Length: 324
Ligand code: TXA
Ligand code: MG
Image (cartoon, rainbow, N blue to C red; front, side):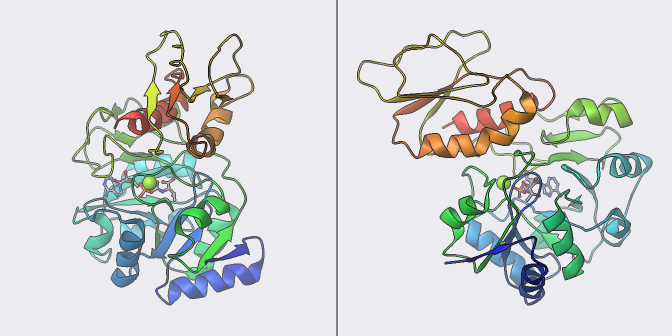
């Protein structure tokens, strides 16, 4: 079983950094979700990440850096939009896809000529990145296709037997993955909605294109239609659709944005936020899905959330989780 170390302990950071330098795989917290990290320049270490997650090799990894000053080492083109976005949102939940330099291994980028870069806003992640002194490739620390982990125990439960070390940094404050934004073409494209909202990005660089969520986009190989899925079947309601009654004798769960009254017949009702707040809802999303998944329910009916701000990322995850 993996050792769970307190990420605020400098000795734990040193141990994790030494493991990463030695080519091992380490789980660590970020502000979005927990990551499964390996030295991005060590192809064998990166191969282990794919193996542990059972992740297809066509799905490229995000490379994490301790500061934007390191970007020119790995990205070949850094235009004004990139500079403005890094300035405004880093450290933070925004990943930029830029033309890559050759020293990033093809395995990391799935053979694309671009690389996804991000500086995470979590003190433990930043301390680790500084201590390692190398870029860290890290997908979310879950088996491929399952719900992303937002606490260290989530990582332990799913991958504890496959790795040796998990740094604990508490629950993730943002709770959904970073926004992936490609700047390799004339139009900026949001490939995955996430912790930085489209509205916030547009306030800095003007209108962006949003990649379709209904299909997998060849520009972002990882955005598969089915993803982030608990085992229990999810039924996502349409906006305004009234909440159905469970069948007689059915053990069903209901997931809503805010607490609601007057619904009957559900074995369990969970609200993502006390008062319909989308920031709180995002932070609670994955842990709530996991909890509902552990109850042996026959299905979970999910109310949609408004599709603005963080609601866009929440709905993206719910749609993929519901598709089966
Ligand atoms: O918040 C996050 O981004 C977390 C934490 C750990 O940093 N990481 C994460 O990684 O969510 P992962 O592997 O679960 O998702 C990475 C996404 C995938 O959709 C992948 O296809 C996309 O980023 N991606 C990575 N490199 C890319 C590239 N060169 N071009 C286009 N998309 C890329
Ligand atoms: Mg993931």
